[in-house]
Image (cartoon, rainbow, N blue to C red):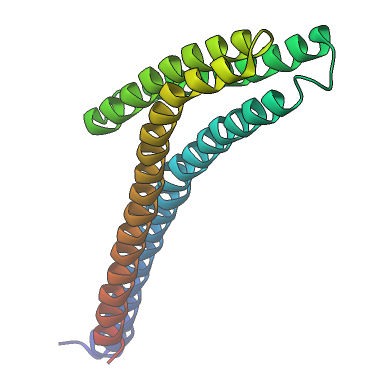
Amino acid sequence: MKLLYKILLAPAIGILLLLIFGGVMLASLLNQRANLDEIYVKHYGEFQFAVATNTAVDTAHARTYRLFSMVGVYDEPKLVAFSKDIVTDLDIAARNVEARISERKDDAAMVARLTAMAEDIKQYRKHIFEALDLALADVNTAMAVMQAAEKIYQSLDGKMEGTIKEAKDSSAKAYEGAAENFRQTLVTASALLA
């Protein structure tokens, strides 16, 4: 072997190992980026959506009972305006769930859960609308109608809490996957550098 090749062999091996090391690090960074995107875009988005929907329904529920207590205090036009606001908020929540269903067509379990939530919101809205309408005439009758709405509310609340819990659990699982990929990359990098 010529002396020139012997001199260039050691640096060439070093450069080759550095290129392999760089490739492993690049693959690790791309994998970490994909995991972070999954956590933030998918799982955190589900969490935000579930919390926003839960908040909208909870707020409508509380505002309905608050309106019942205001029946003797405010005049009818103001109560009707409050009632319309409550029903509009529930309509917006239902539309948001319907929009989410069309976005998540790839996940059959999520579509089934969201469809059940949308149906519950529609039923809840129907009972709330009836109770608010009756409240102007007789608060006690409206409270009786709210019993049916309350059952649907409890069911819906359970579904939304389940969705929130699933989003947290899937985020934790994705985080663990990212941490495991990091550990594997660290071991590989340590082996290459040793």
